[in-house]
Length: 172
Image 1 (cartoon, rainbow, N blue to C red):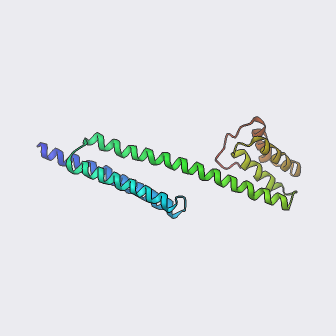
Image 2 (spheres, rainbow, N blue to C red):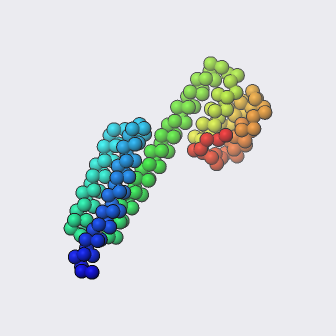
Image 3 (tube, helix red, strand yellow):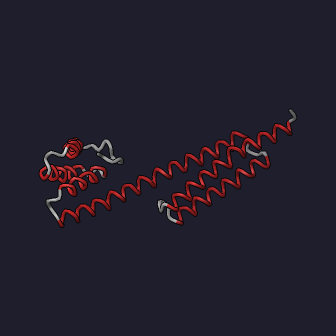
């Protein structure tokens, strides 16, 4: 094979990796914007970053510039950056959700102090937020109202140990 043919094959291979990756990242940004996980501003920033990566990658493919390893490194760095970004936003939104749930269950308890479920869910969300003393108090109140609840017994044990092993997943 001639060097020109090898160069064409390398460019096609780069494009076959680069274009679908940018398409998937763009789809991720778009769907998260539709789900209201990302604001319009955050989505616009993401699309600007994708556009810049597309221009740099296209330039690399056309000119044969950075070489295959360089373009592959750029793509995987973008994927890693977006994965970290996703994790940070997910954690922030999950924490905000738990905080809003704490307020919701506290207002439910004000209306009906004998509501065992409200005390239980308040304790669960406080446990996720790592407020162990408050979680233990809420869960013990839930157990006082409903002593047979196995779930609350397990959550009280976690709160007493000062741990939330299952911090961001639903505890059933």
